[in-house]
Length: 112
Length: 113
Image (cartoon, rainbow over all chains, first blue to last red; front, side):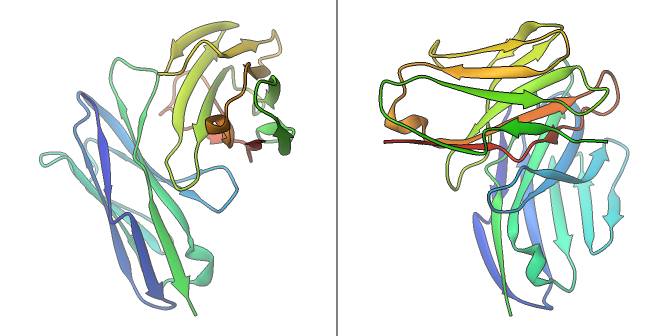
């Protein structure tokens, strides 16, 4: 069964600190993996996409990594800001399906 | 270029009633997917419409139905509302080919009393 597991479920950090969110998947065959950011009460927005051949990709203070062998991805946030407070959702697309598999998300709270 | 728009943004219904939610996809997108998101949970796939047909459906009862119009806009209908149907309903559009990025609307917040 295709599954996407995220950890931690929630995380509280101080402004300016770094943090790393984890995503493990059992999706096969793998097509791509996206990290979405969802502000409270809003729709998710794509931060970055990882394909099979990519190991690392950055988008400003966000850096995503992918290890296709172990089926793990991480999202690292550098020098966190209050506006980073949101839910971060890992979404994996697999070959043969029109529908990607969503993780439950990690809720990040950044305190001043 | 307008993104995905949904209406209404908020609504309150009572148990047993019926509700219709609407979605206009991003310009150039022909595929619309609907998701239900309970508080603190990830989005759960309801169904996807492509070329006015339901292409794939998630694990939701028949009370949930939908439609896609020739202009690619879509409706989600829920009959016989239950308290458990209270959630944020998200519409996402995508275009043919590409990497399958989903473009989400702001959602419709449904409260069932």
